[in-house]
Length: 122
Image 1: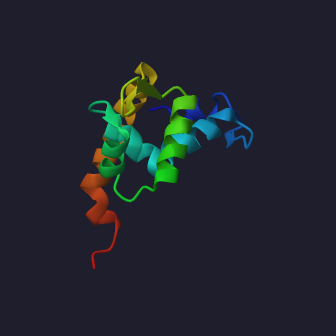
Image 2: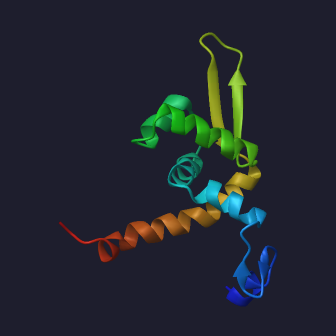
């Protein structure tokens, strides 16, 4: 990866990442604690609300709702409400979301492989 190309790309000036660059907003959404975990959870298949809550252990209902709303607004997640009784809502990755997940999955795998080297053992 050419770091110089990144540092001279949109949102940078003389190697400085601009505080007003819109890429920071997207980066914040995608790399938030819950954003990454939701994206990875949806990488294999579409999931319902309860499946996501169980798959991303520790996320509150409020944070799951906020995270899904942001990822949907960014175009990464598709929300499909089914007209059934009881109501059913499925969440899945859009093509843009799947493209992003292809980049996130190796990062998450690297972290899983190297956690013991990074964090002190009790």
